[in-house]
Image (cartoon, rainbow, N blue to C red; front, side, top):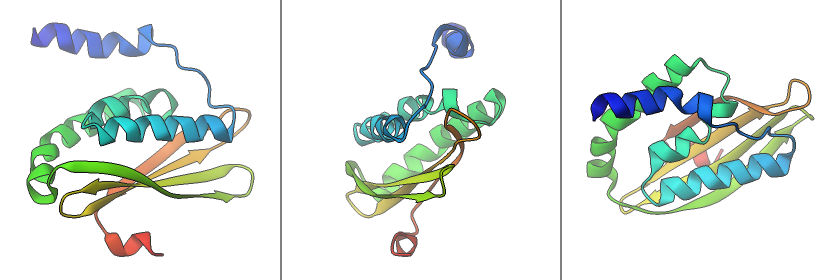
Length: 140
């Protein structure tokens, strides 16, 4: 069963053809879809929605997913259950950069999620995103 699951994960990029991120509304919809999954406890599934637009190699993305899976129990123990998500804001810098900021609300604290988007030509890509529990950073 493990081998079948691994094979399906490896073949996923070949079987799923994602639409391009052509507009800022596409970016907003993608971010909202990711955070909806996060709110329902499906963080890995939410992050997989980001994969077609991420500019890092698939191997690095897989390592990132594995690291999250290892950290998830500690996050749950320390932060408690997820009780929702909230859009904090978005920021644009010029015509080619955009950041969308959410918080994941837990029983004991919050986690900040920042998605960064870059438009080199016609479509938007995701060069990076960050999550952390530094509440003070939300106010800067």
